[in-house]
Image (cartoon, rainbow, N blue to C red; front, side, top):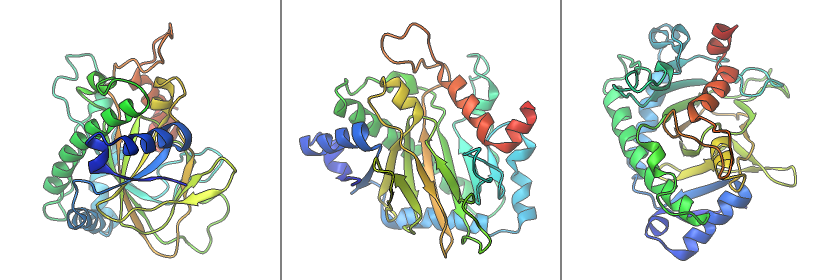
Length: 304
C-alpha cells in the first residue's frame, strides 16, 4: 500500500512521518504527500492553464514545438516519446520547461541541460503562472529531498550541495481519452522508471497512474489538486547505493482526458551521483542525456 503522509509534519521533523518516508523510499518507491503548502485552488488553476494550452489548435502549439530544437523545451506532440522500446510511442502531448542558467556555458555545461525555454503566446498569463509555480516547487523539492535524506539515515544536507543549478524539468502531460483502437502495446505512457532523483507529481485527480507492486500487480494511485504523488528515480537509486527504489509505473488512459504535472528534480549537470565507495564517477548530466536520447524521438533521430 502506497503511504499517504502529512507534508507539514514531515518537514517539521515528525518521527512517524519520517518512518513512513523511509518505508516509501526503501520498499515502495512511491508516496503521496497531503497537507502541502500548495492550495488546491491554486493547483486547479494551474491545471486549467495547461489545459487551455493543450486545447489550442495543433498549428498554434507547433510554434513552440521542441522537435525543432535539440532539447526538451516546449511542446511535444502525440507519439513524440517512447519510454518503452517494447511498446508503441506514448499517447500523450507534453509541455516542458526547465532551469535557465546564464553561466552554464562558462561552467562548461552543454546547452541542452539548461536550454532557453520556449513560451506560447496563449493562453494569456501562461508563462507567468508556470514560472511562479516552478520557482515555488523547486524550493519545496529542496526541503523534501532533505527530509528524504534524513529518513534513509543520511544528514539532511547530504544531497543539497549538488543542486545549486538543478537540471529540474517541469512538465505537463495531457492524456486524451483512450482511443477505441488502442491495443496491449498502447499506453498514455508505457511502463517505465523515472530517470532522475525525485519526482513531484501534481494531477487533476483523475485516475490513470498505476504502480507495479512486488507481487506483479498494478496498484492505482491518485492525488487531488494540492496533494502530490512522489516517486524516486534511477539516479537516486544509484546514488543511494540501491537503497532507494525506482519503481515501474504506467498510465494506460481512460474514458476521460487527464492532466498531470511532474517536476523532475535532478542535480546539476556535473554532480557525481555514483554511490559511496565507487571508484568511477557517474556524471548526472551524462545519465540524463543517455536516457533522454532513448526517449525523445526527435533527439534519437538527431543522434542517428
